[in-house]
Image (cartoon, rainbow, N blue to C red; front, top):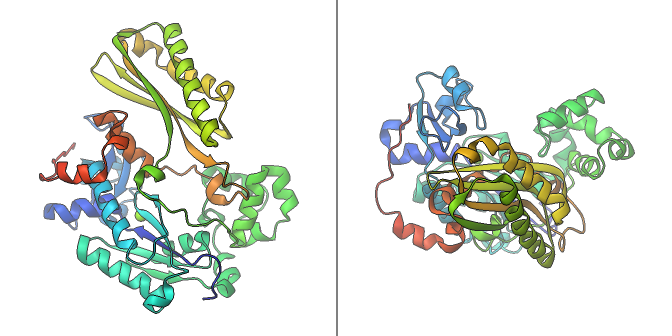
Length: 413
Ligand SMILES: [Mg+2]
């Protein structure tokens, strides 16, 4: 493969959360196992985090409601995710990746980019590294993964999807048009269900159709996202592998919270507090030069339980005038609940961030963050359980210490 500025390898863990549980509990092996993300003990309101390959045969997929999954697969085993354990494994995989390069990006809880531009020659090339990584992860952690290698991050990421599980795929620059063109347009990273519909209206059904559509048309219709999509359809991507020094880097968000003693039920008072918190957040965002587009309100109610509500908007901002109205609306939606259960702790945060120092050329990775962010879900559940600051305070080494006991069994069926 010709040496560009980056030679990225993408690792995508196969059915990650479910595979970890099947590894730890032999009784789950070869069974349709569904790991759920839920704060609700009955799990009916939850969503599916990961399903084992056995459950996928029934059509159970990530981000589906638990209710729907139970309908499709009534004999499935439904368990609540043990996110600390998954993050602990993520950290282990990160360390294995670091044996081959010092440039490793934790892209999500189960995906990594490793830039081997400067180290491939030490290990007889990127394919050898890919194979070694796969073997080490399998031998040391008992988990299978799929590997993609390409001339840039976008292509490497799509390559890892080609053969799953346990696949390894290289897409060379020269093979790009032939490999990409015939694929349905939603196979392109960044094209979700909604975007697919918009594109179909324009007669764009394959990635090839998208690549052949004049950029001006896409720009007119979708703005900067249109341009990024057009570039992506041609397999062009210039985004660098961002070194994740630790998970803190990968899950960066700006947040403030406030404890409210015995609790506040008055929505106006809560609004005022939210404004204060938002001001603090946006000030820090502007200082650090970040813009974000997902706003989350976390409320601890009557010291009994917590709820977390998020909303993503189209445009990125670091202004109170943009962010506060959204935070306020999230709060107002819960008015009935708040009147019954006063808010004892309120936290506002902004994530889905772009570092405006770095964003000279926006790539598809910057612009399209609509897919469910499992890393965010994972850290959210830890925060829900251990408090807002837990993930920043607890180094992963602490978690290791804390994580000695056998994982709790939570069968919520
Ligand atoms: Mg995966």
